[in-house]
Length: 391
Image (tube, rainbow, N blue to C red; front, side, top):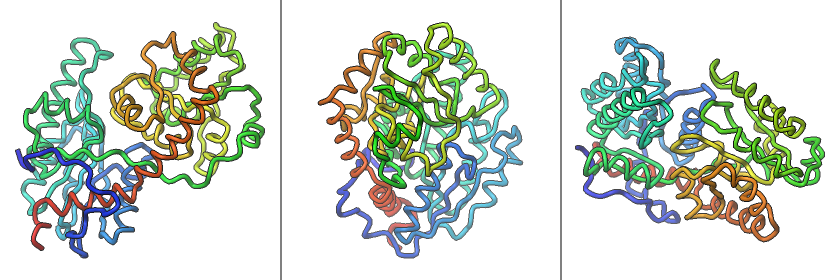
């Protein structure tokens, strides 16, 4: 495999570690763009942070993300500027073609990159150990797909960026000594303003219960909203906001199931779907919220969790490795294993001392894991690969 001999760890954030990057560095950023999804938003923040650091960035939008035809998908590869020193691919199988399973255009795309005289960096956004929810056949098929696309990215890239130790472990278990791997912690978006005063925010949101819980982002079937609904009978002083709209047609039934359960449990009046929340409304939402609940069935990284933390709002999440890692490092995330214990976890996290500690930890996390520091680490990575060296 290409790459270096050791796992790269983040360098000194104060020094930035990018003094060797040429002033005229040109990066082609291959990514979903203007789609409203998490990777598109991430890519926009990365583009802005790199541009602010005087890197020339050309965005190459992924065209025809669901095509089954590699030749049609190749329009994306043909759009990469030949003057770029680095091609940085924001990879998730779901936007690299589909024929039964997603990602079918991955091998042909990376084969094209290999034919170009440019250094390749890939960020792997979704890496999972297993897919138990898909059943035996479906899980085996998707796991085999993942092994192939991961292998292709690792072989074709001078560096592969991941965001958690768990993903590093998974890739090493599957592929052996992955010298190309670089772990860089997922940064936090800048808040557009400080969160609104709690009392004013709750008045604006028309809520007067002692505890406010919110789940933010696309409404998706992989989020276990029902965990929170089932906890509400034991949290009779709590309101639950669901912010966002269904992402795909198949997700439209998710809210119906949530409301049906809420009716059955007698808590329908305390479960509110507030729809899409614009950026300028986030200070109000998170000013009113005590805990942002991120109840994913399976996820590698959550932009919604980072958005909540940007507004100093602590997060409660099911105990997936990415959240456990963040909880251990920064203590701004609380995790739960058993949905039946969620009410007790909420009570403890919203108590006086715990509430103050979690919010202070969220501030520390936000002030450390910034896009500026991430851009500096990314530029240092660029300086270590391919044709950038010795320019």
